[in-house]
Image (tube, rainbow, N blue to C red; front, side):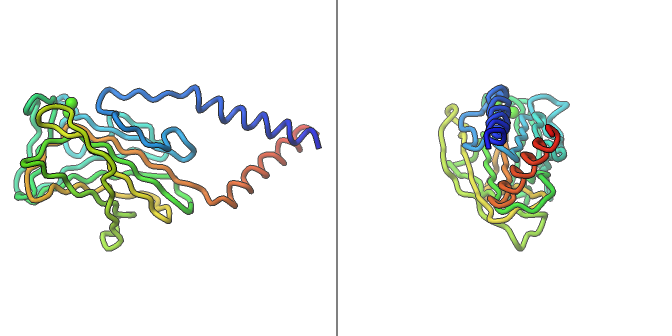
Length: 223
Ligand SMILES: [Ca+2]
Ligand SMILES: [Ca+2]
């Protein structure tokens, strides 16, 4: 019985070791990292839109730590929406104007398998008139009828105008991909940056089966 325990300890050490080595450093606005950062099934994608090259829509993630595909941020516009190189002291800002029916929609690909739970965590820096805070929704696999409202979990000022706001949501299933749908509350919103993190949690049973499977495989190779 000693051998399996040693193998298990080795696997645990490898997992813990590789996590401890990986350190994510983002350029800016990472004031409230997801509690599940760098856990299993985790993704991170971020947009800053700070240069004319990145200040476009749709835009691939500028920081892309998503093993399952490339996340895309798109400002959908009915009237007009504009990228500005600078606005009220922040660099590279997108205007998303509800009175012009514009929204910011982020598509996040994910692990293509059935899992039993999914976490979504969003940090956003923006300015809006009269302290308005936008509404955030998660739209699983683009099905608008299945939308879920994200909960605002933290808010802090980054300067006289801009707010850093954190939103969280846990789904009780795992869509293969989702929209993070950002809609200003009946006003203009000036978005400086968005950081999205997700985590798909495998079922406890399949974790056990996976663990046993790799253990058996290792034991077999040893023989
Ligand atoms: Ca900024
Ligand atoms: Ca920016």
